[in-house]
Image (cartoon, rainbow, N blue to C red; front, side, top):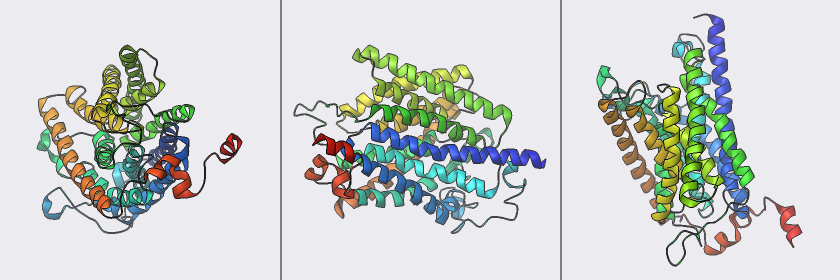
Length: 417
């Protein structure tokens, strides 16, 4: 390969790595904006903790758990290439990864994905989980569960070999392998944790608990949309002009259609222009296109995104009906739209067909069972030992003061008095 092309590929992948890193600011802003002022420091602390520990865990063993080379007993279920990230002889040459990037860039790009799964859970459990319990969960889930599931497809495991030469499960950038991995854990966590005080009245009907900074939430969504250029664009694993351009087009169109679909449908149902539903519709469109962004035409991307926007509205209503409390809509966005996006690969695009749909369902089912079981074991064990829920007093007065001894807006609070 020409040295200039190799360098261009690697530089593009490093830019995408930076964009995926930038998404963590978007997640933080969105989560802060949709929750109450008194828990801002707590949310920021969780998100910073996830980034720092996620990268270290991926360095210690996650990368080699996700890309083991050989699986134990050829099961395609579990393998481990050892601790650390010592580069192979061809790791810095075009012989590695077909000249798409170097070994170091590969590690860093994949490491940015790893932390995202726990970030999704952070939003769902906001405002009432014990920080210590959440940190222990993050260490186990990001360190072990996420890379094992990722190895089943991206590491050459059993999902990648379904159907033999005819094809197999397809998840381009992680509708299932990233988003639903976080979404399943979020679902289990909010079930075991319970709802926030005041979320459901005596009649069982959900009550709105408004976020304290909707402009910040809007900024978070727009940052996430920008970051998705790296999330999906980098999943091409090179700077291939044709495929990279197509992926960015399908990603953007699905996001726009998701927002429009959500806003139209929610307006028809609830007779008001709900900005938070509009914002979550954009995210739903992004999650929905992520599994098949490399396979879809622009028209198909618009359809997938628009339907994802409608699914968001129904998903949020379903979560409320089940009396589950998800302050940021993480389950609807990342789990339900992740499932939709994965199924869409078998319905639309270059691989559409009944066989592909069955393989997609198999991937969703295997991931769901494994993530639900492992998340339940981890969180239930924490609930029975250290506890996972803060006290009523701590929840009412805010986690910032009780767990961190500080206030995100101290001047504002002082002026109130």
